[in-house]
Length: 342
Image (cartoon, rainbow, N blue to C red):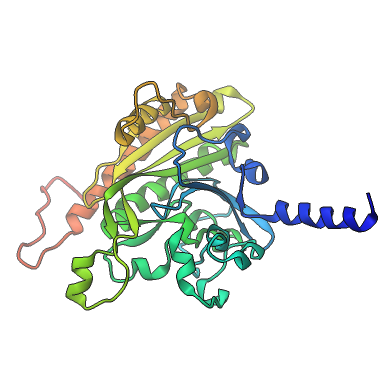
């Protein structure tokens, strides 16, 4: 084989190795506990994405091109101190749309939509959500991999891709789910990172295919012209946690699940309970296997129950505070009993 041919093949292989939309997750396997991908939630229209920015893979996503939302995102908790909400510019994944525009295949990382300079901007819309789909819909672009967990250079920006976002009700996203993220962050740093463990997380959704944005009726009221019913709104959001540790007594896992609505109650679940719940919510047969972490990551440990119980207690406090702070234009806030302080 000639040297020019070998050089051409080498360049081809290098290009394939850089692809963000991939046949499997081997390029970003570091974000999975034991290197094993969650099983049982694949869809006929799903795509594997190793989320790439600045020549580095930052997390992994299973993305459904017909729902135009991620099914789940797998990531690690960052090790920086504190938790700071960070701003970023929303991006799209060009390679999801390379079938519509082959030139996009050469763009091998997430990119701001306006920087693509496409002759036909509509090519992006067939396989993914764009910012216009969310504007003035009443829904947030809710991160699955939280930006507040990944505030280092590159990591934070990488979470601002619409392939990492789902439509979340603002009350759920900004209050209920954020309270869970904040308390998970606190507990995992103390109980996992500080004792030399590695936290692996998978956050996913259950789609409600009967509810999509943008809504045609609402757009007509607001005199907005755009394609409607493009992005599926999840009925539920869930997150599963595994602290991997060389000492099995310090290894643990648990999960939380909540409805994507105001005043949602988050439910603490074991990994087996989460698998059962997801089968039910997706409408799978009982024989359909759903496994988020291989061997469930020591799901029966006492540490898992202790940490999850501590998080539940903090969530109850946060919910109680929200109820106390809530106000209405027609009703005064509820009065607290005299023996309740704060």
